[in-house]
Image (cartoon, rainbow, N blue to C red):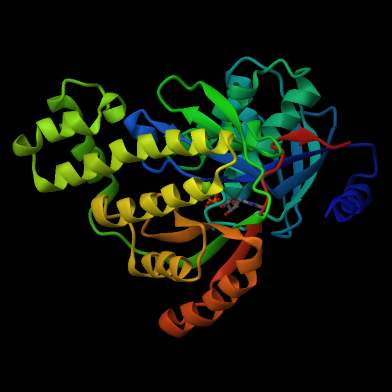
Length: 377
Ligand code: ADP
Ligand code: MG
């Protein structure tokens, strides 16, 4: 990828450049916890977007997407917003940097990546992080704090791409560190690195490629359930709730609200358990918590679907250490922690049994926890 980028940049722009990369991300555990003031536990992965960039002394940006084989040129004022969706991520990052009072000049760029698009690894946050990091380095002597770079990516999604996302994806892509996962406290925004070096195990995603069209707004309904229970408990969010608190109000709430809150309170504890387990290198406990999250999302939070339950059960049957839905649910990937010696058999079973059942070829995406945004050359 690197050599292709360099030669494309040279032939199009013919000058010196700097090379940047940022990474896609996984979330090991901690799902639907962000809006409940809880924890998420992401890490950056060895799938990246890489960009060769050079300031051009003008007030225009000229950027080539290798993967989409498309080119775009735009100015840096609000009304210069480009037509192409992919270019809006780059434009949005530039605008959000400017809005915060930092500098962005014109530049020439060529970029490419191997983060699969729309597979749940957040290729869009990767793209934002790559350009946010680059603009900070090229025009601002890295004065913008790293966490603010993540916020710049998040605001780009909100203001230029119509996606009201949280901060996790951009945070992970920017702050990721090889061999480490990060526990982000979604209430205080504080975070901590934990060692993730699963010797003898591999992490692999299985993309079911299904995405269920949802009727109504199930996410809002989940949120409302959580808010109702929290407010009955006199709390701002379920972050502060314990199982005993929930049991105490069981008679006053609907069965549905009870199940939703049980999942969220359990999930907070599971993230903490996983962190503790990682500090002792206990990957078996990590795996058990992953399965518990899966079945909590399926049975209590009811955001799974038949295909993902099938994949989790298949993993269980193959002796996989941990497996669960990754992401909000209703489709997408499972994330699996698999012992080396079981890996081939598991992948073989997935490739055989999933298409036989659902007539869809799943995508297998092995990942290694790696560094986040950085300058390469
Ligand atoms: P994801 O879950 O992967 O973030 P999104 O739909 O949010 O999926 O973002 C995907 C969009 O991001 C693409 O449609 C494209 O506009 C942009 N994008 C991501 N990766 C690339 C890439 N390698 N080259 C060009 N555009 C990209
Ligand atoms: Mg995205």
